[in-house]
Image (cartoon, rainbow, N blue to C red):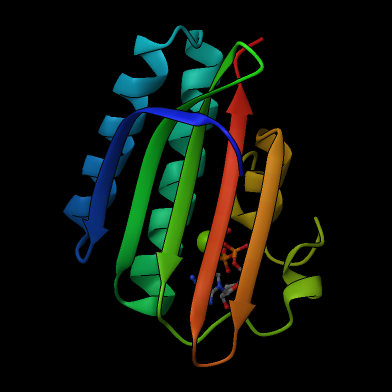
Amino acid sequence: MGGVDMNTSVVNILTEWDIVAARQISRSLAKLIGFNAVDQARITTVVSELARNIYLYAEQGNVTVNVINKNNRDGIQIIAEDRGPGIQNLQGVLKEDYSSYGLGAGLPGVKRLMDEFEIETEANQGTKIVVVKWLS
Ligand SMILES: Nc1ncnc2c1ncn2[C@@H]1O[C@H](COP(=O)(O)OP(=O)(O)OP(=O)(O)O)[C@@H](O)[C@H]1O
Ligand SMILES: [Mg+2]
């Protein structure tokens, strides 16, 4: 994905405290570049969901929060990466009715809350999810 990195933070996810840290970092960066309170909440929800999935299903991994700029537009990019078991039945879990019902919950919620969503997953190799929210 193109864009000039202006600011990058990587959080290694090992414990539930790291989920909290990733949330806080994403909120600070989102606020810094001018996202309103609603979008800040969307972004922290997404970071929580992705970090929590790493903690629960892959045991450990990284969440990277990048401030990016493309075509004079600022945005926030979140990369969640692990070398865990991979997501079985990817098509199924991306369906809105599969796992989550709450607002912003689960991978369908992550997809819905962001402007761009890419996922790569392979059995026993791991999972990489890249999402972007652009400042409007
Ligand atoms: N990083 C990951 N590694 C391996 N499997 C994953 C990963 N993330 C998600 N999964 C699998 O995909 C399923 C769906 O994930 P999703 O986050 O949408 O829902 P959930 O975690 O089951 O429930 P919720 O997030 O609503 O509490 C999970 O139950 C899990 O089996
Ligand atoms: Mg989940």
